[in-house]
Length: 322
Image (cartoon, rainbow, N blue to C red; front, side, top):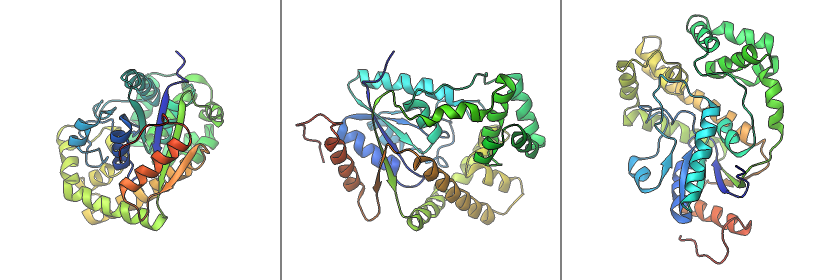
């Protein structure tokens, strides 16, 4: 089915910039529903550390693709692509505006553009063998990727075991490198009637917000949330081992570092993550950026709506509630 005429609003930006708050305001005023494009919010029980939207807001405004799998389960971007597109069709059928929101650039591109993902099953023997190696000798996986696909290795962080394993799995199952598949990604031709907006802050302000949010997460009970995951048997799950905030606190609980050191490491790694997010998104010329500094969230939402009206994305002659 060709989806080219379906409208889709995409809201992106680095972590802690305020995407969830703006998305809810836009959804209220534009009669929309929100589809999460966050690779960690899909997991149940990982709430505080992934900054899931407040439950009350999720009940008032439709939110989708949050809390859909257990932390121990594998989940691929291809599966996300399928679920997100199916969800968008249902939202459009209800005559609502789908709003794709998140900071996971790979998830967003999988939905908006006609991209094919390499074959391979989530439970393949190759995947299981690589995951077993990751438990005992993770460094060797990255070294193997450097040998087999050096360009992919340059783009993947040495500690990002999920992506390293996936890249190696592609090579072993298809005989083609991840880089060969990614050449198709140079084209940016959306299958939707698309508008993309991005939220930004000056780096110093963004980093300060990140530090504040990490402190707030700890006050809300992030350490207790990690303890619950451990008691539920998820401490060895590769998802929890890779998620920012969780892996550092897991190391603390295992006696590998003090709580203070773990917190500082969370802040530093989150700042590094935000920098990588911005690098990814800045490569997409379709994104219209809005600086949110020194503005209320309502002001930012109004600016975005004005832009959408100017671009002819919203129906003319209609008064959009402020």
